[in-house]
Image 1 (cartoon, rainbow, N blue to C red):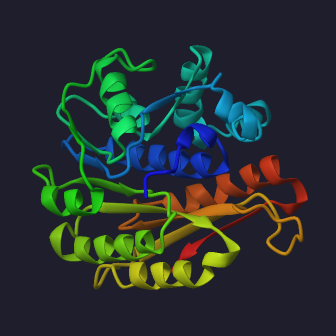
Image 2: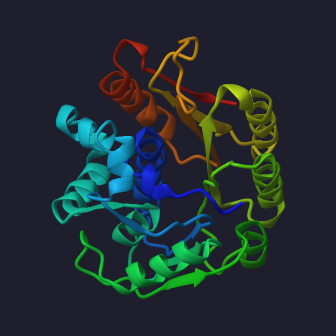
Length: 288
């Protein structure tokens, strides 16, 4: 199904969790001089106009990143906040492809995949423009108009073995959960040194699917490793609330998590949960 349109939702609490985690992982990868690969399996359009009427209708941007920036000054969030502020001053919110090319370096490789026919054209157009935060122009970007689940298998393992695979489908279909499980299990054999970051929505009617996804991811922990598989969840409304919205929070599963990512998210997410959800906000960070 290709009905999902991120223009209604960009900059919301789910984007905050996903993009904050992304910047923390990329910051870790940048600590070494060796080049790395970023595979963004569901890239979207890349950047979004903050005056878009569709998002104004939902109010998710104003209740998400716009509200958070007015309340929080946590230094661990700084790379993400700096990129967001710079783009927002120019009228945009940065999607994951923009964040990736703002933070990657010369020699690193970005692989972007998108299946939606309109989104892929927007993505190509946006990637031809220079990034709005970094002075450099990212040259090493590959864009694929293809099914991401097939595409990820085709491009792994990548030439640069260090790196990250980001999986964040819309989960409109039950098959999305099943496909993400298959990819995560496949990466254990195909690219066992790569970091795999999986975003998922917290939906009351999808508890069984989420439990299966977590169980599958937990089996991907390296034997003999003390890293485990990290799971972080950000809730902005109490799940027991009778007026619960369809999406009350979201989570990130990180296979092969970088050192100290758990400690960083454990410090940051409770503050974000309180800023966005008040007393109903909650954050959970632990190994599966």
